[in-house]
Length: 350
Image (cartoon, rainbow, N blue to C red; front, side, top):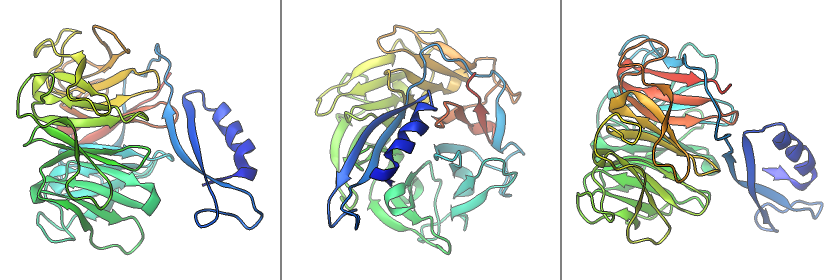
């Protein structure tokens, strides 16, 4: 929350953050967030990174989670997938093979299990190969893709929480995200589609794909990561079509905005794209998994550039082995889940 009396200091904060753009505030009257002094309260709707198109990052990553081989200790990860980076640089990770969600605060040497961690299973205190997670600020909870159980679940972040609740079931969830209107978007790898859900909605609305597996503009082939901008435009890493698709709100087919030139390692190509982020300028950032690199594609570009990685498969600080999820913090630092190296790497913006 940001009260009216605090707007000046909030704007001052933004002016000191060159990589952050202020998008919108919503005002609420009595019955919502009304104050006794007859002032309005304001709820921040969306703050999006405005990364300079020529930004550069350090080429050697710093391990901020895991990095001690695969295992189930709290300083380890086992084939991590998606992640969420909070405003204070806390990262929450879907620790796939450990059937848990683990949280690492900045500077921690050990993570904290915040969901699951009770073995593989279908009980409400268990997860089964979780693939993605986000923090839902409104209810201070985690929303988790739990594909082994064919469900999406929510776990409170409050102390003492021992189990989650089912939000959506009978689904093959792959990855998820949320827009600024609090709609949840979930990719379904079996139906080759993306659906939008209101919290509490079990069926959702088709927003991308849904026309069977294929390479047509109205089709997807194993959609993985998704990103949604403030216009509810849906970007999809169309993994086995080796491309990124953009679906405008209400569109019946998508547009190829990156890749789509077959599988390969040229700058016009991807090989199984995974993690996905789109900034205010429309620049697309993609974890190009089998090419062990992260690519940047400016809006309208015919080819991308390598911003980190691309130095062969390996476990050195400038290498990856299966980069999966990616995200940025408010300063523009890049976080990459290094799946088979069982770690998360941070690359500082220069």
